[in-house]
Amino acid sequence: MSTIVRSIAGIGRRTLEGISRMGYATRFFIAALMRSGTAFRRFGLTIREIYFSGVLSLIIILVSGLFVGMVLALQGYETLQTYGSEEVLGVLVALSLVRELGPVVAALLFASRAGSAITAEIGLMKATEQLAAMEMMAVDPVARVVAPRFWAGVISMPLLAALFSAMGILGGYLVGVVLIGVDEGSFWSQMQAKVDFEEDILNGVIKSVVFGIAVTAIALFEGYDAPPTAEGVSGATTRTVVTSSLAILALDFVLTAFMFRGIS
Amino acid sequence: MDNLVEIENVSFSYGDRPVLKGINLTARRGQVIAIMGNSGCGKTTLLRLIGGQIKPDQGTVKVAGQVVNELKPLDLYSLRRKMGMLFQFGALFTDMNVFENVAFQMREHTKLPEDVIRDLVLMKLHAVGLRGAADLMPSELSGGMARRVALARAIALEPMLVMYDEPFAGLDPISLGVTGNLIRRLTDTLGLTSLVVTHDVQESLKIVDYVYFVSEGIIEAEGTPAEISASNLPFVHQFVHGEADGPVPFHYPAKPYESDLRLGA
Image 1 (tube, rainbow over the protein chains, first blue to last red):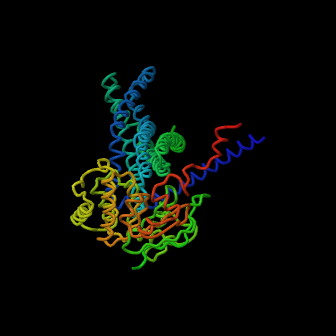
Image 2 (image 1 turned 60 degrees about the vertical axis):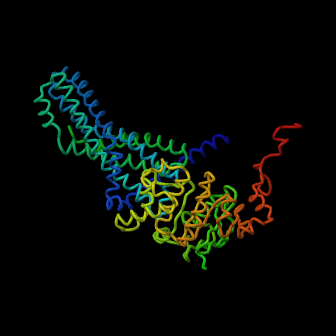
Image 3 (image 1 turned 180 degrees about the vertical axis):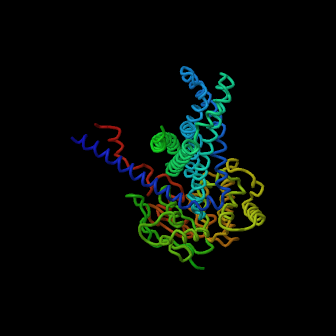
């Protein structure tokens, strides 16, 4: 009897803890938004963070994009040629990338490359009392440290996703046209005709902005909330990657359901 | 001489665990005050109360006539601009070099032109003997040097109060003496008031004007260094002479030794 009571109490406790943590995360997120003035008034701070989370993620994003596009072309060609429609290969590669793979895979890579770095950095700043020191110097760490990183992530993410898609299309071109020999004219002209700016490209950009907000907010919160120990920071870094990956995939489903339901 | 810091009947607890139970403490302008006590007795908590990072459960903390625990966030921030704090391991910003660390508050709080900031930073670094280290990153500094850079950063905006959290912890004898002398000299030349939280008795008795002993959340003893050295209070005697056992027991509370080893069972 007491085991049952205890396990029910355990569920209750964990639920309450989870809810209060979500409340804390929401308040943290709102505080970061409210105190974003510094991030824009002194845009140099944000640019510096764009360099660290955006520019330094370029290599992994570009190389992955290239390979994803190459694989798409190989796989797509296999299937399309059975129906004799290999000239739409360009459309297949471009739509897959722009609508789905670009935003999603770039965001997953961004979460593991930049998100984990943000969490570890802020967690260690907290553990070594740098955030407390900043507060004692009458400088608000949320405004000075958190907000510039947040906006840097939100700005970087769509640019990275766009570059990922561009590299993917280049990879698809290399494999489809240069290697396999699909007609170059139809590859590009079909793509131009079938990829819609609003329906496909803009929706992809919206997705990547949402993913950017989610990944950066999760990474910042986990770092800020990390227990100030080595174990605490490593746990927080892991949670950042796991939580933001799940958030990306779940959000992608929701966004896709809203965006593409009318397209036949 | 008037009082810069006045702490009256302050109590504080972390959750159910009381840390401070009715502390009274005053620091006059221009003095170096030591707050001593064994590890975990609430010394650092006291500094955090003065800096307004935490609020007391009861009592008042006054700095320069203002009640810290009743200030609004903006007023608290403007009071903090007149305070400096030296954290235990320096807490330097690891993504900035020594120069940028010291310049941090000047850049955040003033609109001074860059060449004035440069001169001011070099003067502060000169005062702690590290002008030549301006271009180094914090990871390239020894523990003692990092502590001195943090000291230069703490006095960057010429505060009226500087708080030191264990400034002597983990330093070699030379750095220890250097740090102690710096605290005294900067206090005198800049007209500061210094609050030093420490458990290094010998070093601090050399440089301070007045000592408060904290134990079990209360002020166990207070007095000038001479009075403290001569004190016969058992706790102070144990502390000053570094005796292993006394009012502060060597053993963490436990069951009787015999029953733990299951002797006679």
